[in-house]
Length: 255
Image 1 (tube, helix red, strand yellow):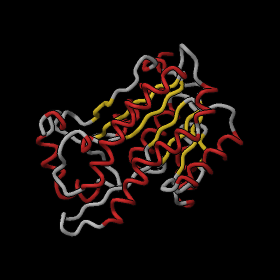
Image 2 (cartoon, rainbow, N blue to C red; image 1 turned 120 degrees about the horizontal axis):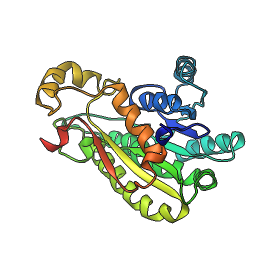
Image 3 (cartoon, one colour; image 1 turned 30 degrees about the horizontal axis):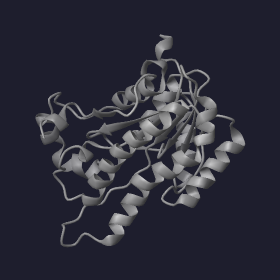
C-alpha cells in the first residue's frame, strides 16, 4: 500500500546502530527511504551500515550528539550531502541508575545532555532541510524517542532518565505547535521494554515478570518499533502531530 510507502524519502536516525534506533532504521529502509544513521562510535557505525545494507540504501555518520557542537557538525555534514530531510528520528539516548543518596551530578548532566538537549539542538540545526522537504499535504516529520518511564513512575532509581524523557514528551508538544505552520510534524514514541543493550540487565533480571504483567503478555519486538516509525513517517501519519504514543504492550496503563 502506498499509504506506507517511503520511496524517495530521506531520513536520519540518531543512535541508529543498535536497539530501538536500529529497529526504526530498518523499518524506514524496508519502506523505501534512504537512511542516515549516527552513533558516537565509528566502528559501530561501520558495522551497522554493513548489516543494514541488505534492507536498502544506508549511510552511517559517526557523531557524539551529547554536545551542541556535534549536533551542528552532523547537520552541516548532512546539508553537504542532501538538499532536504523528510524524517528526523531523535533516538540517541543514555540512562543511569543509582540510589538517591548516591546519584551523582555527572549522571544528570550525561543523561539530560543526550536525551533532552540534543533533540532540541539537532532539530533546530536541521530546520532548513526539514522545511525544504515539508509541504502542506506532506509535512516533514520529527520523531522523538521518549519512554514509558516519562509517563509512569519507573520501578528503578533512574531519576535523570525518567525526568529527561518526560521533558522529551513536553518538548515534542511545544515543537509541534511551533513547527506545524512550517510544514513539520513533531511526535514522540514512548517505548516500553524492548531487547536492547540499554534494557539488557533489566530484562535479564525481570523479563519474565514484565511479560507476565503486561496486558499483551510479552516485550516489544523489532517489527513493533519499525511499524510505528513507518506509520509516523508515511502518508498514514501525515495529520498526526504533538502526540506521545506508547508502544509498550499496555504496560503504562497498568502501572
